[in-house]
Length: 300
Image (cartoon, rainbow, N blue to C red; front, side, top):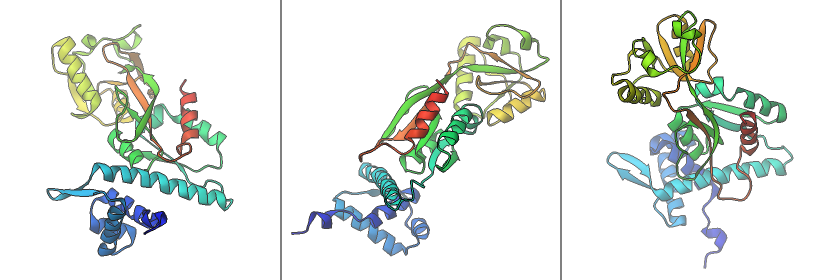
């Protein structure tokens, strides 16, 4: 009878499966792992046999992870991170792993700066790695173990396999106006009705803010959003406002450049920013717990 140790999957197989799960292509994964394609395929097969479950399947011309494959991917990422940290601590090297945060450019520029600065002051010897991702890629980075934390904007709590979330900040919307604009000196919130005849600078079609603007203009003003110019990202939108090319609806936490004024807008819902991290299935605190606490404190 085989011992229980003999029944357990090898760390080498788990590490190989993590690479395969990233590429879902045996040729590319083998190259990234430094193995021949047959060797990589063999290790994934051995992992399946040791666990007694199917980890991937073919769908048309593509490979995709099964539900069990996603669970094994997430567990492997967590386990290997824990093993690395334990070995470093045992050797007296401290925890040399970087804490990795994934967020969008706007969140870094206008929301997370004070928290990141505070973390660097409280943990000066801990490496910090910052990734710039959109919402979907940020969540995928957390699920696959590429990031310890993600900051994403979403109206509702983020839902995903093995993901936990906490509300980080609620930010109202504002309209960015050239300083010489008549509405720049107004008091109180600006309504969409007042923007119906403006040249609107907005994100490309399909982006969450663009969809929200189109829906609210149709509902409240009974017209299409008067988009005259498309731009991606708050900094570029604000720069186009400064150049006098139109007005833009942006997050209220944005810092306008000289010559641009922000006024609150009351016809759009606020933006909820969520902290997301991977739920642990092994004992101990998730990596990034200290950073999570500092970010929460900096915004409350």
